[in-house]
Amino acid sequence: MKRLPPQVVRIPQFRIRWVLLFGALAFLTLALWPVPALLVQDLDEPGVVGIFPLRPGEILSLRYRHSRYGGWVWEHFQAGANGLVLTGLEAEQEAALEYYGLPQRIRYRAGRAAIEGLRVSVGEVVVRATSLGERTLVVGGRAIPLAAGREGHRIQLRVVSLPRLRLAWNRFQVRGKER
Image 1 (cartoon, rainbow, N blue to C red):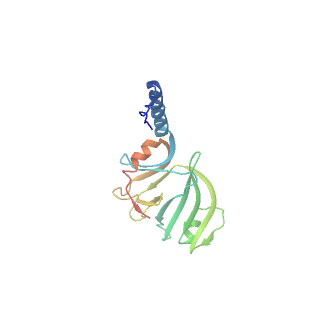
Image 2 (image 1 turned 120 degrees about the vertical axis):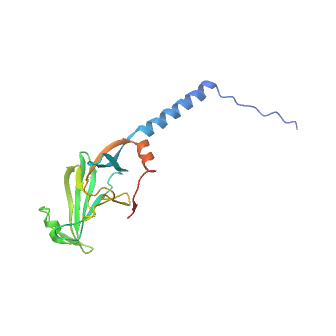
């Protein structure tokens, strides 16, 4: 049996160009597509503390030591259409929750006083970063101490839309320790 030489299939050049163009456009579209993110800025010394991607329904928390009643307090937020939405509060001391003046009933869960089921739109949050209060942002499994190198500074937390490529780049720059 005689072997035939292999046939070479030639793809017209214009098809290769279209495939490459389509691939480049698809990449750019995905890279520049806006996604929600939490932008953390130092208002007293202009600079970005961190940028964190937010997934739908993801809870982020501010943890701090209450200056009047002592004990830890957790404020839980989600990203909403108009910024941050306060969804719950927890505290080691019930009095710290009463300080908020909310009409919801305080319940106990895992040894902590808690107010759940809130839907209070707060837009953005500005807090004072102090080592005494030990304010810490907990987002995406990371705990970021806000007072580190910024004692007494005003720290702003707000929801923004950023290109996906910017968030991918930011992953190499995030500082913080695991919860």
